[in-house]
Image (cartoon, rainbow, N blue to C red; front, side, top):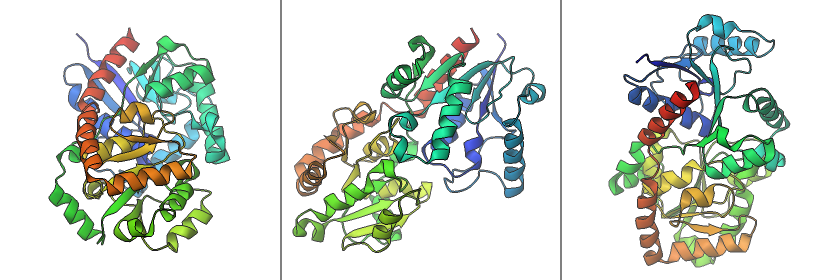
Length: 373
């Protein structure tokens, strides 16, 4: 049987990105491993396999990055079929940023979230416009779509009026390093990052959707005895529209530590060294930190909205992200109850085993096969 020829638009690997870049890096890596004898997986624009993951920079050198981004800029400005000329035998083109994919190929894409429709105030106007444009040009015309959670699929069907049968839910995976991390790795990460006291951890870009101002208020409202024993550590790069929050992080109250961007290789140890992860996001299409923390053996406090209950299962403490008191009380309970943490850790590890890149790749290859028909 002839191999299915799949080209994946991997442009986010060339720019600063968080969740989407994590997804593309591991997804395409495991797709290539799983595809032997089934499919030929290629990355657009003319990318080989990414050798490393750096959320702050490109996976290739500056000259090659600029050349590829320049080509994308040109290809997205006027209708064309140039990508069809450069790869005429492709069966499926899975697009992410390219608005004029090859006409002869089956068109697929991934729906990561619907926040630009549901919470547009938490995104820049440029991002909102870009997502709406992508939906009109790509999502509404695709032959098949992947949604990263059932919650995201439901939102896309309701908001964009997409046919339910066109969308398949394929959850993200978690890198093996998060499952393999040890307590010693956690101790080493704490020492390397200068974290002397036990800490509750937040991981994510500093942006409005992550609800960080309310998290800081909830931590400040904890009893002094709790704050003197446990730090609040935040790891993630600055985003947009958060000047007041960034000012609070740069001149924090006692007990708050802001690490900025932490390299991918240090993340498993950072999770493993935490007393708990707190992730009070207002909306997530999937919520990588929740699953990563559970895989690494860290209890999780997260929101009871969007995909987060779906990903957390029965292993997390779920709270109303708009309630400072609910967030404060959850922090107090988890930080001061070792028995509660132990029960959450056991459930979390079991829950995290649902999310592997091998499974995601296997299901994705089946998705591409059915898309070809």
